[in-house]
Amino acid sequence: MNISIITVGKLKEKYLKQGIDEYLKRLSVYAKMEMIEVSDEKAPEELSETEMIQVKQKEGERILSKIHPDAHVIALAIEGKMKSSEELADTLDKLATYGKSKVAFVIGGSLGLSQEVLQRADEKLSFSKMTFPHQLMKLILLEQIYRAFRINRGEPYHK
Image 1 (spheres, helix red, strand yellow):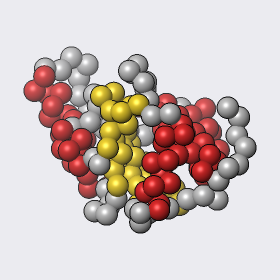
Image 2 (tube, one colour; image 1 turned 180 degrees about the vertical axis):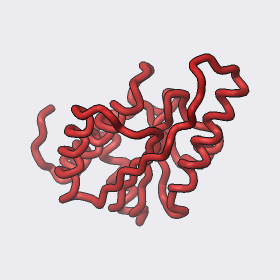
Image 3 (cartoon, helix red, strand yellow; image 1 turned 180 degrees about the horizontal axis):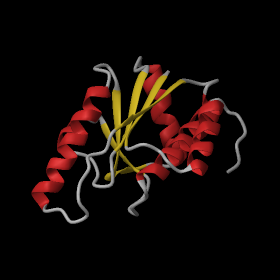
Image 4 (cartoon, one colour; image 1 turned 90 degrees about the vertical axis):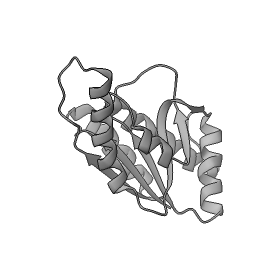
């Protein structure tokens, strides 16, 4: 399986980079992983609704340009469906079983995802109704993908 994680913004925090590198190493035995970072749109702190939409659209165009046409796209969004770790494992297992070997997870910037990206998504996934820093979500997502592969292989992993 080929899994891409497409995110907005460059990761700067050393502790997050270390965690991400660790999970990418662990995942390398299960899947071909690719981390794709697109640049975030520079914007002032205070934005009008129109300006927010414009920022998300520009970031969305960058995201969409990185999605393979055959990819099954899972967008991380607060309004998405919440799943247990076992349900995510089942989703990945079914995608592999039915020939969807390219999966792209998309994490938006601080303002979220554009309507165009959400429309391209095959499904929307929510980790919580809470808001998390998008940089931290990279690490959380990688851990859950790793957990999903361990579940699907019947391999032990702490509960």
